[in-house]
Amino acid sequence: MTRKSAVLLLSCPDRKGVVAAISGFIAQHGGNILHADEHGDAASNTFLMRVEFDPAELDLPLSDFAWHFGETAKQFDMQWRLALSDVRQRMAIMVSKYDHCLVDLLYRHHSGELACDIPCIISNHGDSQAIADFYRIPFFLVPVEKWNKRAAERLIIAQLEKHAIDFVVLARYMQVLSSEFVNAYQHRIINIHHSFLPAFIGAKPYHQAFTRGVKLIGATSHYVTEVLDDGPIIEQDVVRISHRDSVEDLIQKGRDLEKVVLSRAVRWHVENRVLLYGNKTVVFE
Image 1 (cartoon, rainbow, N blue to C red):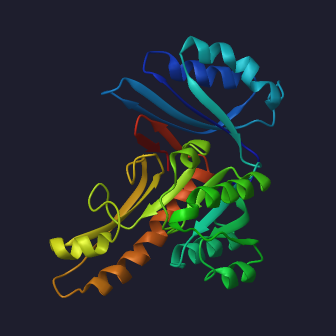
Image 2: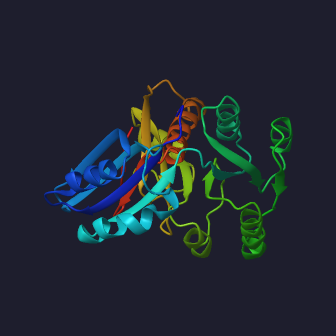
Image 3: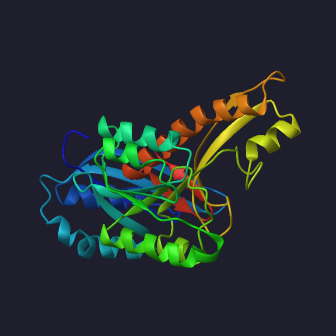
């Protein structure tokens, strides 16, 4: 984004006049619509929309937008939020021993591809300390054992709160989060699962895929919910394998896929392109 813009994200029951009401409101107050994307889900009668507009000539301050837009939102029973392109979200990355997704995210952030801030990296192993030091990002080691999981999570949450974290990325963080943790950051925890969900949930999906003899393996990035590997899916991709590939080959091919899938999901989240409804997402690319 080369100039300041505002992004209006909304969902509501699908009915006539919604688009006209939204575009009319923005135009009436001097805004200039730059991009508009919409989707109607017939099965649930849900309308979803992303409107990006230039607020430079608005006749009202953006701080008062909610008050003025409230009547329109109420009329159409909207769930909505307004995001500003010049307000950078604060992302924490959590990682265990496998560091390929972490390294990829840090490089993309360093190169300007991910327009967010990364105040901290948290891990239950010390292996990624040197990587964090190279990118000059504070690294916090929080060991996790069966007997101290609750205490470890409290330490992690304390760090997230201290750094005013907006959302969390699990870059191959190999611990199952408690429902308390998930609910504290509901729809703000992005995970990468090394499988094309819903196939091969849980541990060692590449080993499961090898045993099953599949011809495609995949990776899935999704929002974390209390149900393991069952949250709303943001992005997926696959790569073809053959009978000649070993488990190690599947793991290597899968790692390349995981990096790309996770980075896409994070970028779309940062750019406010993801809308949730039910256990699904709409991604306005």
